[in-house]
Length: 84
Image (cartoon, rainbow, N blue to C red; front, top):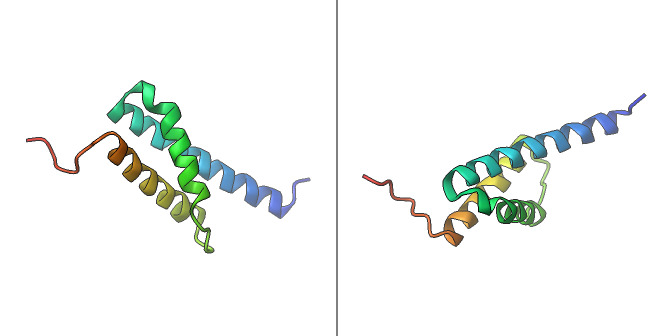
């Protein structure tokens, strides 16, 4: 029978996987298929560089995605100005 810690760990891992998958899909849509591996590396580096600080997993992983998205925009020269 799984322990409470096992269930909590599985829940956190599941949230991380879903957030990373959404980030990779969005990056592929914007930058292209060839960016997937690099985008995954950037997301993982952003996660490793962030302190947990007792945040909810959702808030923590969303912050990771925001940080990684900013880095992707910078690396690929994506502007924050909408095209008219």
